[in-house]
Amino acid sequence: MSEPMQARPRLIVGLGNPGNEYAETRHNAGFWFCQRLAAKLNVGFSTETRFHGRVAHVRDAKLWLLMPQVFMNRSGMSVGALVRFHRIAPAEILVVHDELDISPGQLRLKFGGGLGGHNGLKDISAHLGTQDYWRLRVGIGHPGDRNEVVNYVLKPPRREEQVEIDAALERALELWPLLEEADWNAAMKRANTKSVTQPVTAKSGKESPA
Image (cartoon, rainbow, N blue to C red; front, side):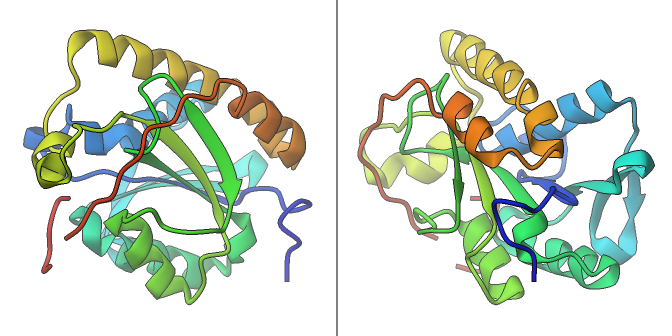
């Protein structure tokens, strides 16, 4: 078993929904991060049907990047398949996802804990049999009405929000040298520096993009 504070990440999962219609929506913030990290590490994605996703492999770092190509609430099927095949421990997984609870431009890095109503995290936890894996939460803000959450996450951010989210993703990329050395404490300190939070809850049913 890997100790979470000593484990180097072997799998980084960016959560989102496949298809052009969702590419620019708030719920795809995890995809945006994975695409940027792949460019930084100079690797490309290819479709791997056995993992139900697009996968990039950083051979020198023994690292996989994964963007599940199933709807958000089926993300665990993709993550579980890759984790079982490559024998990756939960503590070696970092899931990057959109977060309603924090404002655009904010990041939070944490290990384990609650799922915050996020259906992608719920499904991943069900397939892994644990909630004990790393998460990098990318703030997208909250619409203010819980009944508007699904509609909100499946729409693109406003222009000023996108600027803030892009800046947060660039800051997230700066964490990589710390993460590859398993310096999680320093990474958390840097990621969690800004702190403005907003209250929220979300909900969801069958295969769904939200």
